[in-house]
Length: 171
Image (tube, rainbow, N blue to C red):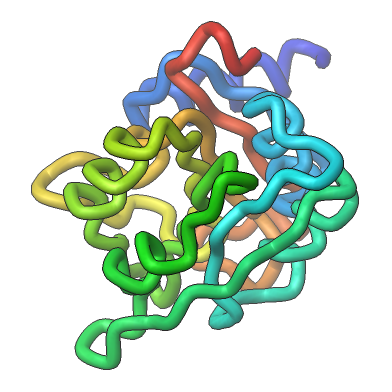
């Protein structure tokens, strides 16, 4: 939380357009903060995709919640909003989308499903820094988002990550 970290958080916030940015030790930690910030806990279901790094699902499991896997759309390989909606049960509390390969998910369709079912939306943007959906950068659609700075990512810092949100209630 020193001056360099504060500057990094401020610069990422300005660059990405997200109100709040918290540096973490990695993208997985940022995903944990997203799940916790959205109030997801034991027995809650979170719909996500298996086409991701394991952290997308394990962040859910580590909060004693249950990952439910939706299919991907074969045209773009992103989570299929129709499959998400078909997987919703009374225990569903959220949707964790994964923007992958530098490609953004169909956030209009995802947000429509979430709004109609009163679900939280978490964006795993760990491999999609700077990706946009209709001109808006990822990390600005859901209730919270996670970015990774791992050496394998498209914006690398060796290690580290960011928890981001513009929703004051998620902090």
